Image (cartoon, rainbow over all chains, first blue to last red; front, side, top):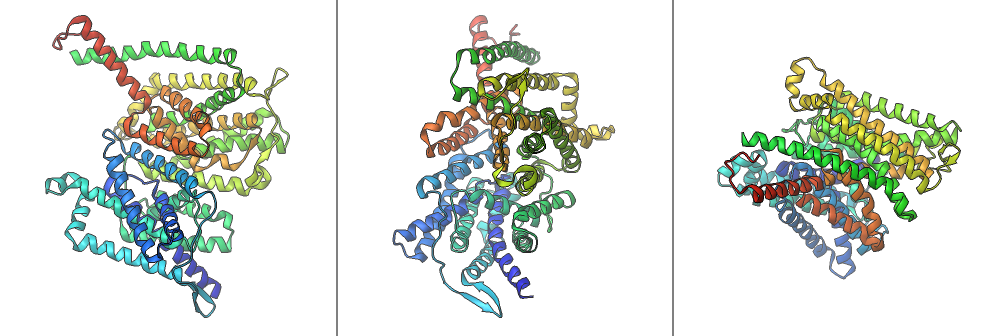
Length: 290
Length: 341
C-alpha cells in the first residue's frame, strides 16, 4: 500500500512538470496552430540559466525570477524575430523552424555547459514523511507552483481584458483583429508566457532530475503526449493529461519495466488518437490540417 | 487566354527543364566515381543514395495524401534490423533480409495505417511519432534479435558476381543503381495517369468518398509503399555500414527526413533529391567546426525555413520563372495584353 502511495506521489509530481510543458504547448498551439518542438528546450534553458546564475553568486530567489523572465523574453524574441519574418510560411515551415531552434538551443547548451548532467541545490532541502511515503519539499514546490500557474492563467484568461483578448485571438484571428485587438501583440505575449512556463518547469525540476543538453526532446514529446491526452487546447486538459501521464509512467516503470515506460505512454497516445482524438476532455479543435 | 497559355508554357518549361536535369543528374552520378577517389566524399554519396530512397518514400506519401509521417526512421530501422538479424544472427542469405524487412515494414504500415490515416494533420503526425517511439523501444529491448542498445556488428557484406561490396566505392554502384531506379519509378508514378488520378482524389477527398472510393484503403497502401522504400534503404544501410544500432533510428531521424523534404521542396522528387543531397552532405562540410557544426546546421535549417518556405526547389522555380519572364519581355517588347506567343 505504501509503495502504491509512493508511486502516486512520484507520478503526480512528474505529472505536474509534464502539465507545465503541455500548458506551454497548448498556449502556443492556440495562438498559432504550431507545435513547438522547442518547448522542451525552454525547460532545459530554465534549468541551465538558473544553474549558471547561482554558480555566479546570484541568490537563488533572484536567479529564479531572472531565468523565468529571460526564457519568456526568448520566446517573444523567437516569435517576433522568426515567425513574423517568415511571411509565406506554412504551418509546417513554422514547425520546422521550431525544430531548427531545438537543434540550435541544444547544441548551444552543449557548447556552453558541456555534456554532463547538471543540477543545483533544491530550494528547500529535505522531505516530508507521511508514514513511510516520502515527499520531497522540492516536488511539493513543483506541484504548488504548477497549480498556481494554472489558476493564474485561468484568472488571466477569464478575468482580465488582456486575457480575454488573447483568448479571442486564439479562437478567431480575423474577428479579433476586426474588434481592434492587436493580434500580433497577443501572439507575442502568448509565446512569452508559454516559454516562461516551460522555463519555470525547468527551474524547479532541475534539483529533482538533473538536466543535460539533450534532454529537451524527451520533454517535448512527453509534454506533447500529455497535452494530446488531456485535449490539446485546454488548460484543464493540459493539467489532467500531465497528471495522468505522470501516474502511468510511474506505475509502468515500477510494475513492468523502465525500458517499456515510453512504449506504454506512446501506445496510450495512439489509442486515444484512434478512439477519441480530442483527448479526455475533448478539445475545441479536433481535426486540423497540417 | 493569356493565363492558360502561360500555364502550358510553365508545364512545358518544366518538362524541358526536367529532361535536361535528368540527363545532368545521371551523367553526374556516372562521372562522379571516375573523377573523385576521395573515400569520405564517396561515402557521403552512398549515404545520399540510401537516404534518398527513404525520403522518396516520404515524398510519395506526402504527394498522395498530404500527410507527413514521423515513422520513416522506424521503417528504415525495421529494414536494417531484419537484414542484420537474418544474415548475422541466423546466417540466412542476404536477399531474405531484404524480403523480411519489406514484408514487415509493409504489413505494419498497412495495418496501422488503415485506422490512423483517417486522422488529420498533426494528429496523424503524433500517431506516427508514437509508432516510431514504440518501435525504437522494442529495438532496444529485443536484444536477441537486434543486439539491444549496443546494436549488432559484423553484418556480412553483399557480394555481387563474387565481388564483395565492402568499400564505399564498390557500394556506390549498387546503392545508386537502386536509388536511380526508385527515383524514376517514383517520378513516373507521380506523373502517370494513376498518379494524377490519385492526387485528384487527395484534393477532392469528400467527393471521392461519396463516389464510393475507399480512400482510407488506398492511403494505407501508399503508406505501406513508403514504408517499404524505407525498409529497402534500411537493408542497404545494414549491409553497407555493417553495424546497426537503435540509436540511428530515433524520432529525430524521422524529423530529419521531414526537414530534408521541406528544405528541398515538398512537391517533387527533385525536391527530395536536392534536400537529401544538401542535408546529408552538410554535416560533412561542417565537420571542421566540431561542436559548432550542429549549431550551424540548426541555423541553416531555420534560415531556409524562414526565407525559402517552399524549399530550395521553390526558390529555383521562382528564379526560373523570373528568368523566363525577363527573356520574353526583352524579346517581344513588354505588352502584357498580347499573347506572349
